[in-house]
Length: 105
Image (cartoon, rainbow, N blue to C red; front, side, top):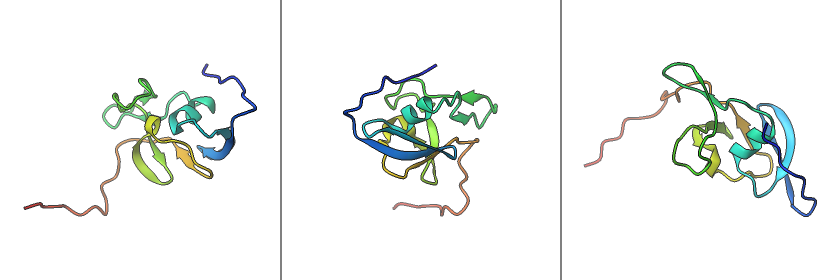
């Protein structure tokens, strides 16, 4: 399993991962915080329901989509942690309810 070595010199922040409070180094991303918390799957495929998890950790594959501070479909590997951040699994496709259709031109 994924485990980080402790570094007492690193500043820490408090985040919540799927309702579980934890402290992580301030330089981590939301995806790495989820992995440190022991999450095996960070979302479910909207097509098959299959569990998915961070893969590339650099924003290419989109497998790390999570709900961060109430906003769905965030690429967790690109979002640095911040004090008080709420990181949650994404259960499926992002809801489009409440979004207005845009027309440009």
